[in-house]
Amino acid sequence: MTGMIIVRRVADLRAHVAAWRKSGSSVGLVPTMGALHEGHLSLIRCAKAENAHVIATIFVNPTQFGPTEDLSAYPRDEAGDAAKLAQAGCDLLFAPDVAEMYPQGFATAVAVSGLTEHLCGASRPGHFGGVATIVSKLLLQSLPDRAYFGEKDFQQLQVIKRLALDLDIPVAIAGVPTVREADGLAMSSRNRYLSAQDRKAAALLPQILRESAALLAAGGDAAPVLAEAEQRLLAGGFTRVDYVALCDEARLQPIPRAQPGSRLFAAAFLGRTRLIDNWPVA
Image (tube, rainbow, N blue to C red; front, side, top):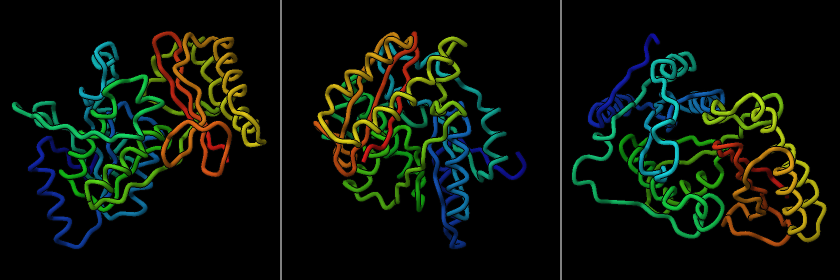
């Protein structure tokens, strides 16, 4: 981990950024919740290619987890993550605790409407309020030139682009293509929850999305294609499907048939593990 700095306080983060700014250097930010995998490291490499200095953050944000979700069980391995970040070329790791991010008396929330009405916004009430608030704080704490987010969490990416624009936060938000396993499964920290049997079944999700996206791109009513995709997931071992939906990318509103700039979204459970993915259609 030679050369990578680890800080836990906002004041220390800002001091390092100020020193870089004084020398005229650009700064890239990669926010994470840790449990890093190749998808996260691809964000670091993108940031490194476009900026003189790269900050990664690790903070398991409690406000984006629902009361029955996996906050306490969410995988944590700061030492292992720090080693991966240093090897990928990260310059600074900001790893605050909850008290640093939400000090006593904290009473502010950021909410983005419209984009959060459907998909994960409907099935995880309050989730995007937590995401929007913590990302707003991280952007303002570090004020990088650019911040990088994966397209696997496409709804999150669109929400963050919207809040940065609406709140006049002077940071360019960059989306980075999803990194996938050899069988197509989108890389995710939650994949490690999967049993061997469930891991095999999980590969059906990208396969069904890819095949359904091709059908939708050919034209026609989306409803039967979406219904068939849901049934295929259930028949393939998924225990519950939150949604399979065709939406326009810009507004994330459901649409009845494919159009330019449309994308297919899905969220489904294998046991207690919730997987999400998306696929461009047209």
